[in-house]
Amino acid sequence: MKSLEKWNQLARVPVERLKTIQFGALKGKSDINPQWRYKAMTEVYGECGKGWNHRLSDVQIVDGANGEVLIFVEVKVWAGDKEFTGVGGDKIVTKDKNGLRSNDEAMKMAYTDALGTALKYVGVASEIYEGNFDGSKYADPTDATALAEQERYENMIADLMTSVNAIKDGIATGDLSTANEAWGELSDTEKQLLWKAPSKGGKFTTKEREVMKSTEFREAR
Image 1 (cartoon, rainbow, N blue to C red):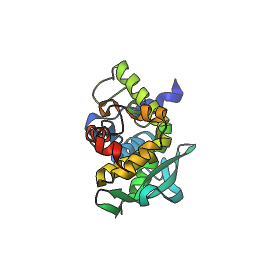
Image 2: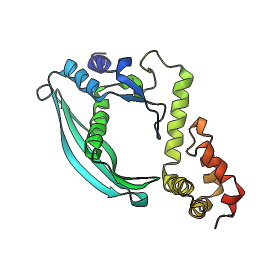
Image 3: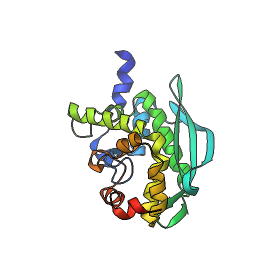
């Protein structure tokens, strides 16, 4: 179809422009070089500022859990006669085992995230997001099914992440009382949902699961 001509030109990412994410919630997924996105758009739509362009349209800064601070931005993009938006975010203040720390790259990272989200609407890297291509070969259908199942799982537990983070932080800092309290506030169904092996996409690491099964954790008050 003619309407998909430009979409298909933007769909596949060269393998050298992909990097596997090693840490965090997106571990194992592909990180796409942002510069490739911009080059691909220029090849299809023309120079940025002429054939396509983007601008910041909204910024929101909100308080997160445990003292963290989040930033969300909305970016407007036009390409040809089309205009669309994308939303992205990052943490301005994040918490790790050493306490709270600032991220002076947060605005830039949130903007890049939002722009990448917006460019999905014209097909940029669509074969990655559809689960059809990993940068070197077409994906096995079972891999796409597993990815879809993991995404459904992530959606199901989204409302439980505050409790998950409280438990993980408590274990990391040795505050088992707080971690146990957060775990105890969950229903049996929620606990069963979260008790998923890390190798299958579960949120608790093997070490954290061992702590949670220990007598010390169960008796912490």
